[in-house]
Length: 300
Image (cartoon, rainbow, N blue to C red):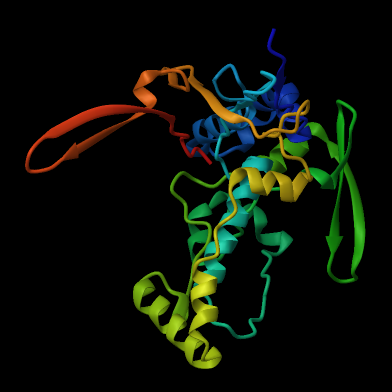
C-alpha cells in the first residue's frame, strides 16, 4: 500500500477567517463598502481554499518506494499570507533586473491615522499614491489567538521599538480585509525613468548605463542568465525542507498526477497522451513512432 503525505497548512489567519468570517459578516458587514462586499467574499473564500486538495491537487511519487506527496493548488491571491509573500519575492526579483546599478533611497509614506477612514471610503484616491504589494500581515507577527482575541506585534519607527497589540477577533478581521484592493487595482506605480509609459526605452537605458559603469559584458550576461527560483527552491530556502524528496529513500519524486475539481484528471504519468510523439520527414520517406520517455510538466 502506498504511503501518502499531504501538505499541512497551519496558517493562523486562515483559521481565524474560517472560524469568524461569517460572524464578521453578520455583525460588522455594514461598515464594509457595498461595492467591495462581493469582492471581499470571493477573495476570502479563495484564501481559505488555498492548498485544499478537495478543490484540486498535484501528486508527486517516488518510483523507488512508492511514497506519495499531495499538494493542493494555491490561490495565487496577494491577500493570502503564503501566496502574497511568493508574489512579493517574484516581483522584487523582476524589479532588480530593471534598476540602475546605483544606490537607491527607500522612502516609506504612511497615511496619517486621521485620514485613513477618509481614504478607505474613497479608495480611488489611492491611485495617486503608491501602495505595498505584499500580504496584510506576516504570519510570524501573530503571537496568540485564543478564539476571542488576536495578539500581534509591529515595529514602531519613532521611537524605534517593538509594540504588542491585542484586539478582538472581529476587529482584527476588519483591519485585515481593509487591505483587499478593488479588482484590477494596480498596487505599485513607477515614475521617472522607471515609468511604465516608456518601459521598453527605460530598460534599454538602464542596461546601457549599467554596462558603461561596469564595462564588463561578462557580468551583464551572467546576471541575465541567472535562473529564477522555482517553487521548490523557494520552499527549500524559506523552510529548509524539500517536500518533493522521499522521506524513506531520499530520492527525488516525479510528477505523477494532476487533478482539478472542475476538469478532472488533467495529467497522469501513465497516460499515453503524455508520451512524446516524434515525427521525422525527409525526401524519401516519413516515419512516425512514439518514444516511451515521460515528459515532466513544469507547473511551478
